[in-house]
Length: 84
Image 1 (cartoon, rainbow, N blue to C red):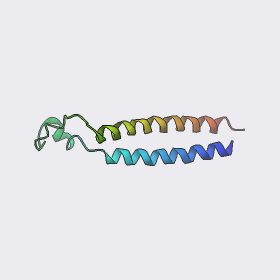
Image 2 (tube, rainbow, N blue to C red):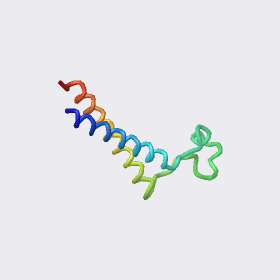
Image 3 (cartoon, rainbow, N blue to C red):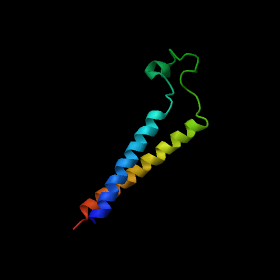
Image 4 (spheres, one colour):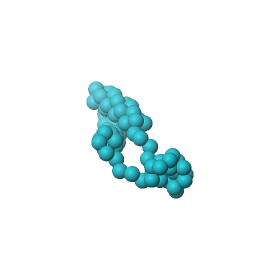
């Protein structure tokens, strides 16, 4: 059971790092609260635009990583509490 727990911890750390990278690589849609309300948009339409191509792929990849991180975390908790 210790090998499973060690593998889950390594997997959790790996997914966490990949998740941080995928979130930090994403292009921001607006420049803070001012960009969302409509000021200081620089001609980008107030931050309301659609994702296309690589932006969409990175966006959905980050959601898959979030779901994977959640599942691995729950599995890690279950293995830890049910270990003898």
